[in-house]
Length: 93
Image 1 (spheres, rainbow, N blue to C red):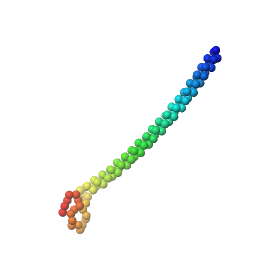
Image 2 (cartoon, helix red, strand yellow):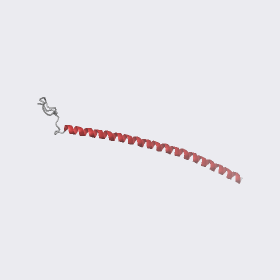
Image 3 (cartoon, rainbow, N blue to C red):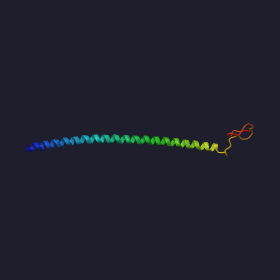
Image 4 (cartoon, one colour):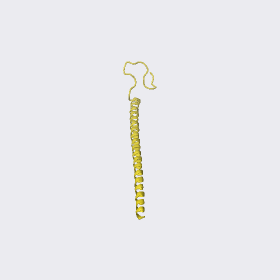
């Protein structure tokens, strides 16, 4: 009788260890999948940030060109020999 109980206990213990091992494997698979998804999201976020930085840089460059063109010290009219109206904004001959 004692041997039967010991064998039954050993069988239950082995079954529990097997179940724990299966659950651990599932957990590791889920963790790996979550890690890969997080890394993919980080890569995507970095790409978006790089695109936004490039767009901001382009807008900044465009603004600096507009500022240079709108600078009153920058002549907009042609130089020499032109008798027509001036090309600067709102100025007429």
